[in-house]
Image 1 (cartoon, helix red, strand yellow):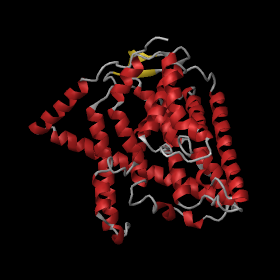
Image 2 (cartoon, one colour; image 1 turned 60 degrees about the vertical axis):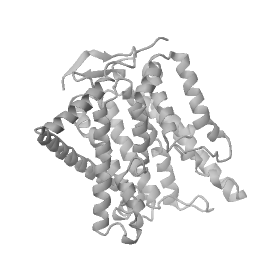
Image 3 (tube, helix red, strand yellow; image 1 turned 135 degrees about the vertical axis):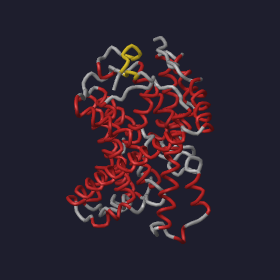
Image 4 (cartoon, one colour; image 1 turned 30 degrees about the vertical axis):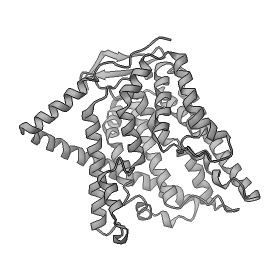
Length: 403
């Protein structure tokens, strides 16, 4: 990979805060952030295995099984995954221009997974024929607007609005960004974290507004707070502190409900993405990885694998498979802490490897089709117009602003 260092950005806190740009203007991949991306995706698989595999203990019951309680501890460690993934996207978005071609490629990627897997599962008998409906078909063919993959729906709308956000951030100084982030977090995070009631507009972090909050936090870290954590161990301590707080609140609400029968509607509130504790833990883990420097062959392997991690999500979270694969990977055979940990680890490895392999295949297929279609004049014309739109947003439109 050839990198143009003249176009890079370097904060004063050292090499781990560097975001370099390749000659095509795209931000170069940093192995430390790409490793965190892979870990975050594995954590997401853990969450879906434990939750949708019915492994987590029922918190409404007085007695929790040993493996069910242990599963909640693992859940608390992994609940940061989505926020971490959002932080990474927001951090790199500071130096990325909006590209219509990227948006279309992303939409096509989501659409292919949605349609091919969804219909294949139906024809193979994996998805029950009696549940096949017009709504199911609509979900497959319109995955973004139908919320087939909630994360992708939020990401696509965030990406469309990224030029507006970027121009706003460009002209905001430190205090203005602090004020904007504070206001966003008060209404989307802090209120729900302290009020013992379910707020009507609380999307629990499954919406565009929460993505915007985390995006702003990541942009602020990149511009002004890159040196806030001076050692990776400090970030890890913040992460573990957040995890402990998540688990303590979770168990406290469980005890309150068992003894009084109240607060059932918020018993799991501390493991919702837009709660303050998961956000703190996610920021700690993110900052820790900012301070890790990975080089050599390990860095090359990580940066080669990481672009395909989205395929892991799109594969196992397809509507036709999202409640099926857990039983295929032994979720219904768990009866102790030992095999819970063993089966969960094995499931993560299997899903991750299969997902990466599937996306490598998809990417190579799409690259081949693109090369073949480029021989067609109408296709070249369309590609040219798409690139022209992308040029409207090219350049360093984030800027550095003033403190």
